[in-house]
Amino acid sequence: MSYKQKIQTEIKKALNGITEEIVVEKTKLKEHGDAATNIAMVLAKTQKRNPLEIANEIKEKLKSNTALISKIDVAKPGFLNFTISDQALIESLLEVYKSRENYGFVQNKLKEKILVEYVSANPTGDLHLGHGRQAVIGSCLVNLLDKAGYNISSEFYINDYGEQITKLTETSWAIYEKLNGKQINWSEGFYPEEGVSPYVEKVLEDMKSGFMKEELGQKVKDLILKSQKQLLSSCKVEFDKWFSETDLHKNKVVEEILKKLKEKDVTYEHEGALWFKAEEFGDVRDRVLIRSDGRPTYLVADIAYHIDKINRGFNKLITIWGADHHGQEVSLKGGLKALGYDADKLEVIFVQLVSLRQHGQEVKMSKRAGAVITVEEVLNEVGADAFRYFLIETHANNRMVFDIDLAKKQDKDNPVYYIQYAHARCCSIFRQYKELNAEEKFDFNNPELLMNLFKSNEQEYAATKDLILKILDFPEEVILAAKSTSPNRIANYLKDLATNLHQFYTICRVISKDLNLTKSRLALIEAVKITIANGLKILGITAPKAM
RNA sequence: GCGCCCGUAGCUCAGUGGAUAGAGCAACCGCCUUCUAAGCGGUCGGUCGGACGUUCAAAUCGUCUCGGGCGCGCCA
Image (cartoon, rainbow, N blue to C red):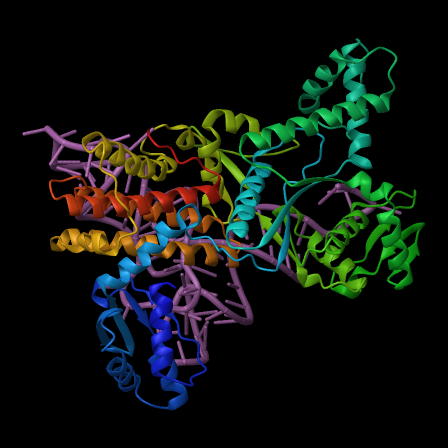
C-alpha cells in the first residue's frame, strides 16, 4: 500500500460512513507538504459547513498518527496538507527491493483479456514513419497493459487479399517486363515503382523461368512481409500473431458475416452492389459491402475480423489506426452493433501524423510525390532506442515533428540519453563501491539501515526525499498510464525521475567515509536503478550499465 | 457543409477539476584535484487561441467562436 493509500484509509476511518471519494494527491509546492486532500471542501458542500472547520476536525483526529504523518496543516480554502514521516517513506521504499524487476507492476493478473491490433500495414511496400509511430505506440501500450495486469495479446492484420495484392501483382509484373526491356506505360493504379522494385529484383534472383504473374506477386508480397517483420523486430516491435485477411475469406468468416447482416435486414441492393444501412447506426452515409462486380470491400472483412476477435474470447479490443482512417470507426462499430455485439468493447486509438524535420526544415510526407520517409531510413540513422523514445514521447492524439538531427545526436542534447545516463550512473556508483569494498555485501531490505538516509543537512534531506517520493510514484504512474492508454506518460515520468536522480547525485555524495550513510544511499541508488530499468522495459528501450 | 483530432514559452512537447502552469532545445551567466560535466544551478521567456458558462477552485468540464490538420469513394 502506498503512503497515499494509507492516508486515504486513515481519513476514511476518521470520517466513518462518508461516501465521497477521498482524493490524496502529491503537492507541487514544498510549503504544502508532501500530499494533500481536498476532502474538506468536498464535504463542505453537502454538509453546508465551513471547509476550514471540517479540515481542522480531520486534523485533530489524525494528528496522533505520527508513524505515518509527521505534520498536518490546514490551508486556505480548506486543504489538508500532510508531511509524510521518514519512517513511512522507508516502509514504502522497501517495496522496491521486495518486488525488484516487478516493482511498479501489477502482480495479480486481472480477468480482462485485451487484444491490441496495430500497424497492420499493407504488404505492398516499405513501412513509413507513420507506421513506425503506430508500431512504437502499440508495442509500448502492449508492454504497459501487460505490466498493469491485463491479459494482453497483440496482432498484426495482414491485408493480403483483394485489391492491394492485385495491384501489387500488376506493379511487380510491370517492373519485371520493364527489366526485360519492354516499354511500360505506368498505370495510375500501380504502386510507386521505386518502392516495389527492390523486392521484385530480389525475388527474380531465385525465380525459375516460366513463372506466372500471380506467382511473382505472391513471392513479392511474401518478401515484403518478411522484411516488414524483420524491420519491426529490429526495433523491438513483436506480435503474438500475424493474422491473414486471406484466411478470413478462406475460412468463410466473411461469408458468414454477410449472411448474418442480411438476416438482420440491415442491407439492401442498389445499383448492383450490396449496401450496409450504416446511417441507421450513426454513420454519415450507408456503406458498400459487396461491389457490383462481386468483390467484397475492406469493410466487410474488417467487421468480420473484429467479430472474430470477440469470438476468440477477448473482452476488450484496442485497434490502432492512422488518424487518416478515423472515418472508418463509425462504420465498423455500426457493423458490430448491427450484429448485436457491444461496440464499446472496441476502442480505436488514432495516431496523428508525423512529419520530419531535417536540417531545420520540415519535410512534408506525401505518398503521391513519392516523398515517403521510411522506418528503415530513420531507424538506421538514429538507432532503435532513440527511434522508440522520440516516437513514444508525444501523445498519440497530437501531431508530432520528428527532429532527425536531434535524434541522431549522440550527446547531451538528445533526451533519450538523459534517462539512460541516469541508469548508467547508478550502475557506475555500484562499480565504484565494489572496487573499494570487494567483500562488503549487505541487505537493502533493512529499515534501520535506510533510516540513515535522513541523517543529513537540509539540502541533502530535501534531495533525498524528493527522489524517494518520485520513486514511490511509479506504481501509480503505471496504472494511470494504462487506464488512459497513454504510454507516453511513462517516458515523461522517467525524464522526471532522471532529473531527481541527477539532482540527488550532485547534492549528495553516495560513497563516503560514513559507511552506514554510504550503504543507505547505495540502497536508494539501487531503488532508482530498478525503477528506471522497469520503466524503460515498458518503453522497450535498453538500460545501459555504462555509457 | 458535417464529423474526428489539435491549439500551452522563440522551437518540440508535458500537465488524473486544485494552491504561484512545467521540462527539453535555442540564448545568456555560473559550477569538475573526490562516485561519468551525456550532469547541476541561475537568467531570459506565457493574456494556456478567444468569449461566455459550470464550480469554493478551470489549461483541464460545457456551449459558442477563430486558427491548423485529417476524413466524409462500389480506395485501403
